[in-house]
Image (tube, rainbow, N blue to C red; front, side, top):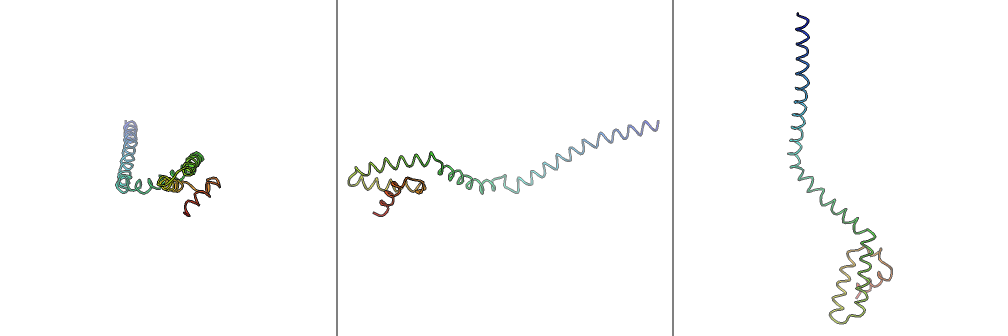
Length: 124
């Protein structure tokens, strides 16, 4: 009978060992997560640091897309033709609008004639 008692004791210890190990592992992971959460302010500090950088990168990518540059080129061309037929205060307002719109796009990506027109407006 001593043999059977020894087997039962080993089996009961084995059954208790695995659950205890899993509970300990879960507690360790929870404590580690909690300390990390508190150390980063609930990820607020990392969000405050990286979110503006990511937004700026996305904005730069957007501003360099072909569709954005093409849309700005078409808009500036329309404004250029309106500027040619404008007079007085309307011409001054269109000049300011054209210069403002041209500042939002890389002028090197615009057609050469439009680049020259914008450079001429800047000189006047």
